[in-house]
Image 1 (cartoon, rainbow, N blue to C red):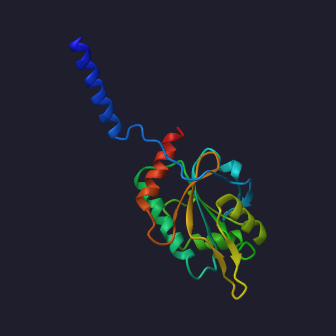
Image 2 (image 1 turned 120 degrees about the vertical axis):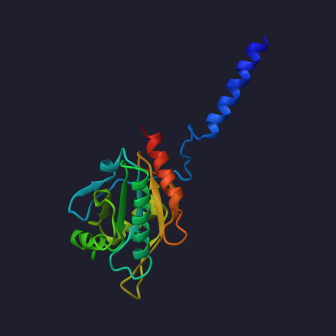
Image 3 (image 1 turned 180 degrees about the vertical axis):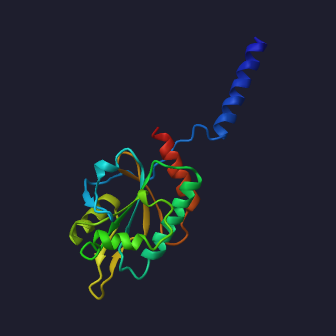
Length: 199
């Protein structure tokens, strides 16, 4: 009886130690927003759809090439996030940028824009265009609960500065600050965890 009690106690201690090591950590979603179907064109002239992204998690952002305020630092921040992914050896992910000024942002223009940044692996990036201003405003609001609005007094577009984590099934599961106080480590750990959970 005593021997059985000792074995049970050891098993309990071992279970606690293993759970403390984070061996069974699962990603905890903070949002549950379904991304609407889309089929847009990236900076290389290739079609990218919600369906083509299925099976891999992705980080989304809203930017435009003429932006004179938050887009350049947001894009730089995203390149730093990718570097942290590379350090962790992460491979199965994408970075998706939706242009909020599609009339100006042709694929060639988006390609030139991303070429100005120190991108670790540009094959992971899809900067998208090929829709109307109204389309992207509705898409951003319905899928990401974020604002896209023309500024009537300039050539600028008002839009949110968040980064969004989308899981393998096309569900937005978390958002982060993409402009200031960006949680680089948290984003890298979340991406690593969600990739592991999907295996």
